[in-house]
Structures are given as structure tokens and as C-alpha cells.
Length: 334
Image 1 (cartoon, helix red, strand yellow):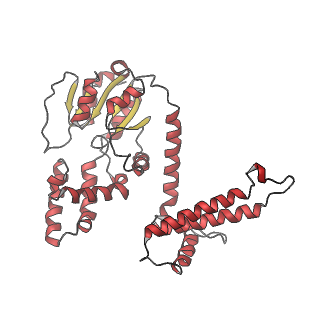
Image 2 (cartoon, one colour):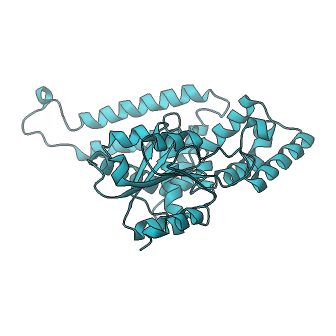
Image 3 (cartoon, one colour):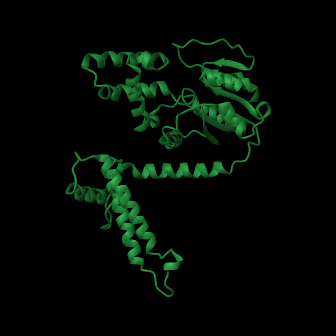
């Protein structure tokens, strides 16, 4: 977004608008009131833009030529309001290109999903966190950097907190307020920060994730990713997940969200026993859901510190890596 051929970059336009805004209000002003005022102002300018086209039939004068310059002026007013909203909401203007194309991908994906009628060939069901994404390491790294400030820990408390995180990360143990040693409400704030400031985009990819998905592709199976990430409360996680998958260059066909994963499959009229080769998940709840529908299910337990339940159902198979899963399924390798 650097200036070329005398044309101002978006960053320069933003800085100019911010400088003007600073003459009108200060950062100590109530942000919520500013956001409300600016948003309503942008709505009003949008209506002004619409009126330049005389869209109401009864107000249209036959033979009158449209004032295109007026329309363009209203668009600039809308843009200036948008820049002001960017300013007051602390939008990362330097990341706009990346965020724009990520959102375009999300919109395209949602449009394609609306036309999905049925799954018509063999498929595999794959979870994301702790199956493809090393959530434990990613969350620990984020908390290590940001949590001491969020929780206002003392230097001594910070050292103890980081020691616990490093142990959890090294052993790949279950991560919760109890295991990190902070109150549940405090840990909720850290997770909120992680979910709202792009933390999901920073999670490492397990080394066996790409080979596993490539192997699924070689077998010509449809790859359906189903995650329980809370996009109902954090819609931005849709974009973050798409960006993570793109950055990791992980192949997939469909990406679904549900905290009732087997029911999500039923909604698409998948024939559980014949169309799904297997499902793989790290959460015993979802493992049971899949298995109860007659789906061959791999329960992936990568680390320690979590009790390993017995494989009480005949179609549940415990594995410790995706490499181990592929070896057990080697009969399907092309």
C-alpha cells in the first residue's frame, strides 16, 4: 500500500482521516458512542448515495440525467466514515489486503456450500484441533506471551504460570484453567483474547497432517473437516480457520461447524455406514457420537496427562498419530 505515481495509499488516506478526527475527539472519548454515531452517519450517507439515482419511481423525473459526480461524492463520504470507524475500532489497516482476500474466500466457500445437495462418494471425517492443528502448543505459546498482561500477574506469578504452560506444552497435556492454575474466569479472558485477536491463525500444524490429507486425496475420498470451534459466539473464527488452512496448504473439500457432529452428517443425508470410510477425532464425546451411528472411528490421543478410555465399542480404534491411523488403514492405500 505504498504510494506510487502520485496516488496515495490506503494507509496514507487513513492517516489523513485519523489526523482530522483527532481535531474533533480524543481517545478518552467514549468509543461506543463514537462507533454508534459514525455507523449511523455512514447509513445516512448510504441513503444519500441511493437517492442520487432517484430509485423511488414516484420521485423520478422523466428525462432528467443522473448526476454521477454527486453519486461519487456520496461514496467518498461513505468511505471517510468507514476510515473513521477503522480508526475508532482499532482495525489493523496494514492487514487489510490479507483480511480482504480471506473474507472473499469465506464468502465464496459459503456460496458453494449452499449448493451442496449430497455427498456422493466415499468420505472421511476429520477434526481440526489436536488432530491437524497442534492446539495445545499454539494456545500455550499465545498464553505465554499475552496472559501475564491480561491477568495482571506479578513477576513471581508470571514465572510460575509460564513454568506450568511449558510443562503442559512439553507433555502435550490437557489445557484448562485447572491445569494452568488460574481461576476459570481468568482463563476465559485469555481464551477470549486468543479467539478474537487471530490466535487460531498461529497454531502450529502437526507434521503428519499434510501427509495424511494427501493420502486421503490419493484414495479419492472426500475430505470433510468438522470442528466444534464456537463460531456462533466468535464468527471471526470462520475466517481465521480458512486463513489457517490456506497458510498450512492443507487440502479439504468441506468445512463444517457443529457441537453435535454426527447430527451434522445426518443433515446432509450421508449414508453413515457405506459412504464414510472412517472418522478421526480427539474428543471422546465426538468419538462416541460417530461410533453410535455405526461409523468406524479413530480416537486420536496425541499426548499424555489424559486418561485413555478403553475401546468399549467395536468400531472405535485408539491411535496416537495420523501415521498410525494410516498404517491401520494400509489396505486402502493406492
